[in-house]
Length: 450
Image: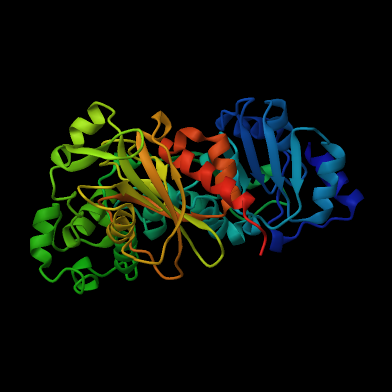
């Protein structure tokens, strides 16, 4: 819409743009087309748009052939969009974007997000929709220029800070262009900017403890003018030794360290846990026959290389809300690295019984031990990597302690979201998990209601 059309449409609907809702309507059609082009939207993609307003971008996204979910908080604008842009590929959600659960987007094979973020809640919206792990592959935000500079900043610049590092830890941020106030109605008091964010491959950066790293960053930037030596003395007693090991000056301040240096500092404080001390290639597994009777013990390498039948356990841990914890397998794994898997899983070793192995895996991978109930026993097949699998279920309400040597990351998910995720993106999962999950859900559906 042109400026005159925007004014007339808002007047006709009796809408006075509300500063509290961050309502600034884009009326430059060429700029709207340029913004949509930066998202490189394909017809097979699902696009979430935050704050569509009068549909300046929505219409163009539909023309690209995408399916669009437009999240609009203002009921009047949501109704206007339903009438003006009624389309089989468009869904309008009249809710606050902060009430939307991004995890439901795992049900889509490929998701992108566009948003003209209100200045007053841009930080909250940004952090909500870039939470890691995320089903979104690309974010394209129009926001206050000051915020855009902070997100895309580099070390030793005034805009570089804790938010910069928090976002860039799992994402790459590109500042695309500055947008003047004149292209919006009403005109904002400051410039805006467009940034593009894409998910970072986890292997681009060294393994590290996210929780410790972010704690150090927050503490380091709590007083920007102070040297890190003083701010991190509790974490690093021998600061000079740490500076030499990581490779920075001992008088350094927080904004002078790159993301990689921050990670190396965290790993200096708490080195990545070593892999299992046993040589994995010679770890002994029981080789079994088609009836799961033990024939002999054989080294892990021989079992996997020859696809011999062997044993494994999978455990699903549920929280009090009934959500299931899934882990992303460590990058160190010799099979299915960085794929999503059961809460805990592993091989039955030596003369172990299935139950023994299940409790051992819980302790080793999640640092817990809880009562377990056997759900099913799956036969060995190519879909389970030739493993007989005993599947267990348990409940836990405390704090998990994932083993960094075994688990890249993890999170709780509602069962229905996992169902949709497995259906839409089976390539995200270890194949054995898919078989276990299908069996688990079948058993759940057959179980009588309480």
